[in-house]
Length: 122
Image 1 (spheres, one colour):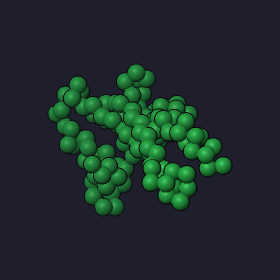
Image 2 (image 1 turned 120 degrees about the vertical axis):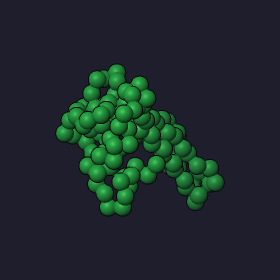
Image 3 (image 1 turned 30 degrees about the horizontal axis):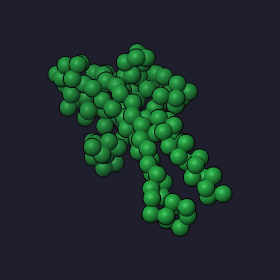
Image 4 (image 1 turned 45 degrees about the vertical axis):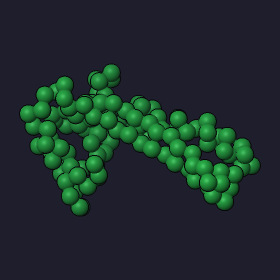
């Protein structure tokens, strides 16, 4: 899904969230699972990687609520509940969200390979 354009070209976060809530209306809580996923790739055809590409991904599992909670974050953060924390990404704040987000997990996954690449690249 093209999440940023879910409600159409030029639609903002509020419109995307409203469309998602309408689409999930009547769906039981146990079937409203969600996942934020991020994939990173590093290519350097002129450097030590040659034709190789370093990739890593990260995911954060959650549940889509039936109403927004919290004022922080952006996008779907007010609807995305992280069950083990009992809070949405919009409620967590920058620090806790940054430690658990799909982007942070992708960065943690690529870090050792990126450091090895940088050591080779000099």
